[in-house]
Amino acid sequence: MLRRSLVLGLSTVLLSIAMETQGVTVPSLEQRPSDAAIAQIRRDRGAPDHTESHGGQAIPAPPEANQTQRRDRGAPERTDSLGGQVFTPPDIFVPGDTTRGGETLEPIPSKTCTTDPDATVQVLASINEYGQAHGLTSTPFPTLYAYIPPSTAPTGFLTLINADLETIAQIPIDLPAQGGIVAVNTAEVEPPLSPLVTAEWYEWHVTLICDAEIRIESEPAFLMRVEPDSTFTDQQAAATAKALPVLFGQEGLWYDALAASFEYHGQVPEDEEWLPEWQQLLLDGNLDSVLEALDLMPALTPEPLVPPTSPAR
Figure 1 (cartoon, rainbow, N blue to C red):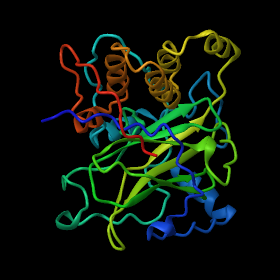
Figure 2 (cartoon, one colour):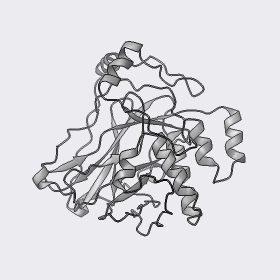
Figure 3 (tube, rainbow, N blue to C red):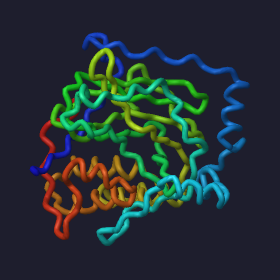
Protein backbone atom coordinates (compact mmCIF):
# COMPACT_ATOMS: atom_id res chain seq x y z
CA MET A 1 0.00 0.00 0.00
CA LEU A 2 1.30 3.41 -0.92
CA ARG A 3 2.21 5.70 1.93
CA ARG A 4 -0.08 8.66 2.40
CA SER A 5 1.57 11.96 3.07
CA LEU A 6 0.48 13.95 6.09
CA VAL A 7 -1.88 16.76 5.29
CA LEU A 8 -1.02 19.47 7.77
CA GLY A 9 -3.56 22.21 8.30
CA LEU A 10 -1.02 24.83 9.32
CA SER A 11 -3.42 27.59 8.30
CA THR A 12 -6.16 28.40 10.79
CA VAL A 13 -9.69 27.26 10.15
CA LEU A 14 -11.85 30.28 10.83
CA LEU A 15 -15.24 30.15 12.46
CA SER A 16 -16.32 33.10 10.31
CA ILE A 17 -16.60 30.79 7.29
CA ALA A 18 -20.33 30.10 7.49
CA MET A 19 -21.15 26.45 7.02
CA GLU A 20 -24.51 27.42 5.55
CA THR A 21 -22.65 28.62 2.45
CA GLN A 22 -21.61 25.01 1.90
CA GLY A 23 -25.15 23.73 2.17
CA VAL A 24 -24.67 22.50 5.73
CA THR A 25 -26.46 23.62 8.87
CA VAL A 26 -24.45 23.48 12.06
CA PRO A 27 -26.39 22.06 15.01
CA SER A 28 -27.47 24.80 17.39
CA LEU A 29 -25.52 25.32 20.61
CA GLU A 30 -26.90 23.48 23.59
CA GLN A 31 -28.67 25.38 26.33
CA ARG A 32 -26.70 25.69 29.53
CA PRO A 33 -27.91 23.37 32.32
CA SER A 34 -28.79 24.89 35.68
CA ASP A 35 -26.06 25.33 38.26
CA ALA A 36 -27.67 22.60 40.36
CA ALA A 37 -27.66 20.20 37.39
CA ILE A 38 -24.00 20.95 36.66
CA ALA A 39 -23.07 20.39 40.29
CA GLN A 40 -24.89 17.07 40.31
CA ILE A 41 -23.17 15.94 37.10
CA ARG A 42 -19.79 16.82 38.60
CA ARG A 43 -20.61 14.91 41.78
CA ASP A 44 -21.74 11.89 39.73
CA ARG A 45 -18.42 11.97 37.88
CA GLY A 46 -16.37 12.31 41.03
CA ALA A 47 -14.94 15.69 40.04
CA PRO A 48 -13.01 17.45 42.81
CA ASP A 49 -14.11 20.84 44.12
CA HIS A 50 -10.75 22.34 43.15
CA THR A 51 -7.99 21.18 40.85
CA GLU A 52 -4.36 21.91 41.62
CA SER A 53 -2.24 23.43 38.85
CA HIS A 54 0.67 21.66 37.18
CA GLY A 55 3.47 20.42 39.39
CA GLY A 56 1.47 17.52 40.81
CA GLN A 57 -1.50 15.54 39.61
CA ALA A 58 -4.00 17.71 37.81
CA ILE A 59 -6.74 15.35 39.00
CA PRO A 60 -5.91 12.52 41.38
CA ALA A 61 -5.97 9.00 39.99
CA PRO A 62 -8.99 6.95 41.10
CA PRO A 63 -8.78 4.29 43.80
CA GLU A 64 -7.04 1.06 42.84
CA ALA A 65 -10.39 -0.69 42.50
CA ASN A 66 -11.45 1.78 39.81
CA GLN A 67 -8.09 1.47 38.02
CA THR A 68 -8.43 -2.31 37.86
CA GLN A 69 -11.98 -2.00 36.56
CA ARG A 70 -10.87 0.33 33.77
CA ARG A 71 -8.03 -1.95 32.71
CA ASP A 72 -10.59 -4.76 32.52
CA ARG A 73 -12.61 -2.57 30.14
CA GLY A 74 -9.82 -2.55 27.58
CA ALA A 75 -7.44 0.26 28.51
CA PRO A 76 -4.49 0.14 26.10
CA GLU A 77 -1.13 -1.34 26.96
CA ARG A 78 1.88 0.89 26.40
CA THR A 79 3.37 0.20 23.00
CA ASP A 80 7.03 -0.64 22.41
CA SER A 81 9.33 2.33 21.97
CA LEU A 82 11.59 3.16 19.07
CA GLY A 83 14.28 3.82 21.65
CA GLY A 84 14.02 7.29 23.15
CA GLN A 85 10.84 8.39 24.89
CA VAL A 86 9.52 11.76 23.71
CA PHE A 87 6.33 12.08 25.79
CA THR A 88 6.00 11.21 29.47
CA PRO A 89 2.29 10.75 30.26
CA PRO A 90 1.23 12.60 33.41
CA ASP A 91 -0.55 10.53 36.06
CA ILE A 92 -3.99 12.09 35.70
CA PHE A 93 -7.53 10.82 35.38
CA VAL A 94 -10.48 12.56 33.73
CA PRO A 95 -13.66 12.22 35.83
CA GLY A 96 -16.42 10.54 33.86
CA ASP A 97 -16.44 8.80 30.49
CA THR A 98 -19.57 10.32 28.99
CA THR A 99 -19.49 12.61 25.98
CA ARG A 100 -21.04 15.92 26.93
CA GLY A 101 -21.69 17.02 23.38
CA GLY A 102 -24.75 16.60 21.22
CA GLU A 103 -26.22 13.41 19.85
CA THR A 104 -23.89 11.15 17.88
CA LEU A 105 -25.32 9.66 14.70
CA GLU A 106 -23.64 6.37 13.93
CA PRO A 107 -22.78 6.00 10.22
CA ILE A 108 -24.57 3.27 8.31
CA PRO A 109 -21.77 1.08 6.83
CA SER A 110 -23.43 0.78 3.42
CA LYS A 111 -23.90 4.55 3.25
CA THR A 112 -20.79 5.90 4.92
CA CYS A 113 -18.93 8.58 3.00
CA THR A 114 -15.47 7.29 3.90
CA THR A 115 -13.51 5.36 1.28
CA ASP A 116 -12.94 2.59 3.82
CA PRO A 117 -16.22 1.76 5.61
CA ASP A 118 -14.26 0.89 8.76
CA ALA A 119 -12.22 4.11 8.81
CA THR A 120 -12.87 6.57 11.62
CA VAL A 121 -12.08 10.16 12.53
CA GLN A 122 -9.41 10.18 15.24
CA VAL A 123 -8.50 13.12 17.44
CA LEU A 124 -4.80 13.38 18.25
CA ALA A 125 -4.91 13.25 22.03
CA SER A 126 -2.79 10.91 24.13
CA ILE A 127 -4.57 7.84 25.52
CA ASN A 128 -3.85 7.07 29.16
CA GLU A 129 -3.88 3.69 30.87
CA TYR A 130 -7.58 4.08 31.62
CA GLY A 131 -8.41 4.38 27.93
CA GLN A 132 -9.12 8.12 28.10
CA ALA A 133 -8.04 10.48 25.31
CA HIS A 134 -6.75 13.63 26.95
CA GLY A 135 -3.82 15.98 27.34
CA LEU A 136 -2.42 19.06 29.01
CA THR A 137 -1.37 22.38 27.50
CA SER A 138 0.37 25.48 28.84
CA THR A 139 -1.12 27.81 26.25
CA PRO A 140 -4.46 29.64 26.53
CA PHE A 141 -5.18 28.93 22.85
CA PRO A 142 -3.88 25.47 21.83
CA THR A 143 -3.80 24.05 18.32
CA LEU A 144 -5.82 20.82 18.07
CA TYR A 145 -5.15 18.08 15.51
CA ALA A 146 -7.25 15.25 14.09
CA TYR A 147 -6.81 12.48 11.55
CA ILE A 148 -9.45 12.60 8.80
CA PRO A 149 -9.89 9.43 6.70
CA PRO A 150 -10.36 9.70 2.91
CA SER A 151 -14.00 10.56 2.31
CA THR A 152 -16.48 12.43 0.16
CA ALA A 153 -17.80 14.44 3.10
CA PRO A 154 -18.17 18.08 1.97
CA THR A 155 -17.46 19.56 5.37
CA GLY A 156 -16.95 18.98 9.06
CA PHE A 157 -16.43 20.86 12.29
CA LEU A 158 -14.65 20.73 15.64
CA THR A 159 -16.78 21.12 18.77
CA LEU A 160 -15.32 22.55 21.99
CA ILE A 161 -17.20 22.20 25.29
CA ASN A 162 -16.23 23.89 28.54
CA ALA A 163 -16.36 22.70 32.16
CA ASP A 164 -19.86 24.18 32.56
CA LEU A 165 -21.11 21.81 29.84
CA GLU A 166 -21.52 24.66 27.37
CA THR A 167 -20.66 24.22 23.69
CA ILE A 168 -18.46 27.29 23.29
CA ALA A 169 -17.36 26.76 19.67
CA GLN A 170 -18.21 24.75 16.57
CA ILE A 171 -15.35 25.45 14.19
CA PRO A 172 -15.68 24.51 10.49
CA ILE A 173 -12.85 22.41 9.04
CA ASP A 174 -11.80 22.07 5.40
CA LEU A 175 -11.49 18.34 4.81
CA PRO A 176 -8.67 16.74 2.76
CA ALA A 177 -10.35 14.46 0.22
CA GLN A 178 -7.43 12.02 0.32
CA GLY A 179 -7.30 11.99 4.10
CA GLY A 180 -4.62 13.26 6.44
CA ILE A 181 -4.07 15.37 9.52
CA VAL A 182 -5.78 18.73 9.91
CA ALA A 183 -5.09 21.44 12.47
CA VAL A 184 -7.35 23.98 14.14
CA ASN A 185 -5.62 26.91 15.83
CA THR A 186 -8.03 28.15 18.49
CA ALA A 187 -6.09 31.43 18.77
CA GLU A 188 -7.40 32.62 15.40
CA VAL A 189 -11.06 31.61 15.57
CA GLU A 190 -13.66 34.29 14.79
CA PRO A 191 -15.38 35.48 16.87
CA PRO A 192 -12.45 35.14 19.28
CA LEU A 193 -12.61 32.56 22.03
CA SER A 194 -11.83 33.40 25.63
CA PRO A 195 -8.53 31.97 26.91
CA LEU A 196 -8.81 28.50 28.40
CA VAL A 197 -9.39 28.59 32.13
CA THR A 198 -6.56 26.91 34.04
CA ALA A 199 -7.23 23.66 35.93
CA GLU A 200 -10.55 23.05 34.14
CA TRP A 201 -11.28 20.16 31.80
CA TYR A 202 -12.58 20.94 28.32
CA GLU A 203 -13.95 18.36 25.90
CA TRP A 204 -13.56 18.39 22.12
CA HIS A 205 -14.41 16.16 19.20
CA VAL A 206 -14.57 16.30 15.40
CA THR A 207 -17.59 15.58 13.21
CA LEU A 208 -17.78 14.90 9.45
CA ILE A 209 -21.03 15.80 7.69
CA CYS A 210 -21.71 13.22 4.99
CA ASP A 211 -25.21 14.42 4.14
CA ALA A 212 -28.39 15.58 5.86
CA GLU A 213 -28.76 12.27 7.69
CA ILE A 214 -25.30 10.79 8.22
CA ARG A 215 -22.57 12.18 10.42
CA ILE A 216 -19.30 10.55 11.47
CA GLU A 217 -18.11 11.66 14.89
CA SER A 218 -14.81 11.01 16.61
CA GLU A 219 -14.48 9.78 20.15
CA PRO A 220 -14.25 12.72 22.57
CA ALA A 221 -10.94 13.98 23.92
CA PHE A 222 -10.22 16.14 26.92
CA LEU A 223 -7.99 19.16 27.39
CA MET A 224 -6.71 21.07 30.41
CA ARG A 225 -4.61 24.20 30.62
CA VAL A 226 -1.97 24.22 33.36
CA GLU A 227 0.57 26.76 34.60
CA PRO A 228 4.18 25.51 34.41
CA ASP A 229 6.61 26.69 37.06
CA SER A 230 9.22 29.38 36.42
CA THR A 231 12.01 26.85 35.93
CA PHE A 232 10.22 25.22 33.01
CA THR A 233 9.27 28.62 31.57
CA ASP A 234 12.94 29.59 31.53
CA GLN A 235 13.89 26.29 29.87
CA GLN A 236 11.21 26.85 27.22
CA ALA A 237 12.47 30.36 26.47
CA ALA A 238 16.04 29.07 26.00
CA ALA A 239 15.17 25.97 23.93
CA THR A 240 15.58 25.73 20.16
CA ALA A 241 12.61 24.89 17.96
CA LYS A 242 14.02 21.39 17.45
CA ALA A 243 14.30 20.78 21.19
CA LEU A 244 10.83 22.03 22.12
CA PRO A 245 8.79 18.85 21.30
CA VAL A 246 10.86 16.73 23.69
CA LEU A 247 10.92 19.50 26.32
CA PHE A 248 7.14 19.79 26.26
CA GLY A 249 6.75 16.02 26.09
CA GLN A 250 8.91 15.35 29.13
CA GLU A 251 6.84 17.93 31.03
CA GLY A 252 3.70 15.96 30.10
CA LEU A 253 2.29 18.77 27.92
CA TRP A 254 0.86 16.65 25.10
CA TYR A 255 -0.83 19.31 22.97
CA ASP A 256 2.20 21.61 23.18
CA ALA A 257 4.60 18.81 22.21
CA LEU A 258 2.48 17.86 19.19
CA ALA A 259 2.12 21.46 18.00
CA ALA A 260 5.84 22.14 18.47
CA SER A 261 6.70 19.03 16.46
CA PHE A 262 4.52 20.06 13.51
CA GLU A 263 5.75 23.65 13.69
CA TYR A 264 9.38 22.55 13.57
CA HIS A 265 8.68 20.26 10.61
CA GLY A 266 7.08 23.19 8.79
CA GLN A 267 10.20 25.26 9.39
CA VAL A 268 12.77 22.55 8.56
CA PRO A 269 11.00 19.94 6.38
CA GLU A 270 14.32 18.50 5.18
CA ASP A 271 15.34 17.30 8.67
CA GLU A 272 15.19 13.51 8.37
CA GLU A 273 15.35 13.11 12.14
CA TRP A 274 11.88 14.61 12.48
CA LEU A 275 9.84 11.59 11.37
CA PRO A 276 11.26 9.05 13.86
CA GLU A 277 10.78 11.52 16.72
CA TRP A 278 7.21 12.30 15.60
CA GLN A 279 6.46 8.59 15.32
CA GLN A 280 7.84 8.08 18.82
CA LEU A 281 5.66 10.91 20.14
CA LEU A 282 2.54 9.20 18.80
CA LEU A 283 3.68 5.82 20.10
CA ASP A 284 4.23 7.34 23.54
CA GLY A 285 0.67 8.69 23.36
CA ASN A 286 -0.70 5.23 22.40
CA LEU A 287 -1.79 6.54 19.00
CA ASP A 288 -0.63 3.52 17.02
CA SER A 289 -3.97 3.56 15.18
CA VAL A 290 -3.20 6.98 13.66
CA LEU A 291 0.21 5.80 12.43
CA GLU A 292 -1.42 2.70 10.95
CA ALA A 293 -4.10 4.78 9.22
CA LEU A 294 -1.37 6.94 7.66
CA ASP A 295 0.69 3.86 6.77
CA LEU A 296 3.48 5.28 8.89
CA MET A 297 3.98 2.67 11.58
CA PRO A 298 7.72 2.72 12.16
CA ALA A 299 9.94 0.05 10.66
CA LEU A 300 13.48 -0.66 11.83
CA THR A 301 14.65 2.20 9.62
CA PRO A 302 11.81 4.70 9.03
CA GLU A 303 11.69 6.25 5.57
CA PRO A 304 11.72 10.05 5.27
CA LEU A 305 8.24 11.55 5.34
CA VAL A 306 6.90 12.92 2.06
CA PRO A 307 6.55 16.68 2.65
CA PRO A 308 2.91 17.83 2.88
CA THR A 309 1.60 19.32 -0.31
CA SER A 310 -2.05 20.04 0.47
CA PRO A 311 -2.84 22.05 3.60
CA ALA A 312 -6.22 21.84 5.29
CA ARG A 313 -6.87 25.40 4.17
